[in-house]
Length: 388
Ligand SMILES: *Cc1c(COP(=O)(O)O)cnc(C)c1O
Image 1 (cartoon, rainbow, N blue to C red):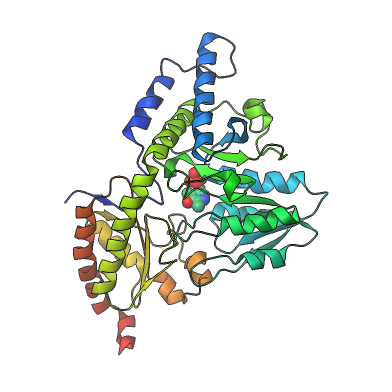
Image 2: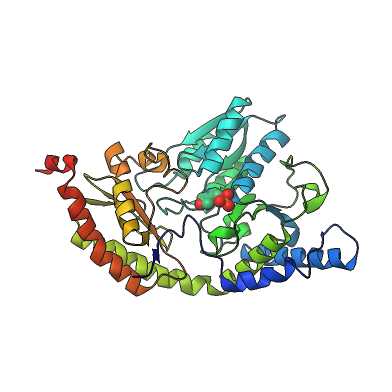
């Protein structure tokens, strides 16, 4: 059996059309966009065309997009940029307990620099209650950061409802949309967000490039100092090939997103229901309906997610337990603990994320193989004797 890749939330393969679009910018059009000669101008033009495509993906203006070195940098830039630009106004930031490490760790860093951070709890599905945001705002609050959809459990957050509250309070609102950009329709005006993070490699673009949408008129302190690139907001010679690839990926996503979301939702539900029918003591993590079209996250009582993941790997199936970032650590995922799972169930979690090259046959193959693996692992598990 060919390898089955079900870890699209960790990263996606680069679309062949994206690779094709990037290639000329390694060789013929290799110029530095800051150079005034033809070679530089060509690269500059390519960047601006890509910027328009990325802006169009989220209904932003061309000059509201700043390219970064990935989704993590976009998150760091949003939080630190706002925090240090608004120190005189206040020192309070509100976020959620289930954010990506790029947001959580930036908040921890800011805490050491004198900022107060409120980590809002979530309900059993992983949803932030907008009323909690309202209740946490003080006259010191300068920023709210709540992700658009969670990378581990796929739950989609009530961003529009939260933005009504932040707007009313005159507080800036950032959302990490790394898991939704290119997968779900995004209109920054309708969503009501001021800042929004994206990453190319989560939408069939290359790794090491992302973008931060910054609503016109908002001032941020730059993270990277040096030249005047990105209108003085992010120094360093632009990653031209990466940016061109991001632009092409954004263009393709815009065309294919609606059809893909529908196709993946059907496959996702087939997988979830198939597992629920065949495996006892199985728990679906995240919201049953309000979740990413490609996300399946389940916990199996009595066994370790890592054992399932490794056994699947031996059968040439790529999966994840928790998120890619936390799989190296022994701690159960902060997201699964925040939705109220016991540490045992949190450790028994398996994430399967689908994408453009996932087929119905692959899902059927997993539905045949996984119940057998679970039965085998439970039979040798010392925890399973507790069942009866
Ligand atoms: C992957 C991911 C990031 C980090 O993006 P990189 O481009 O890998 O730095 C941030 N937030 C979420 C929700 C993600 O899934």
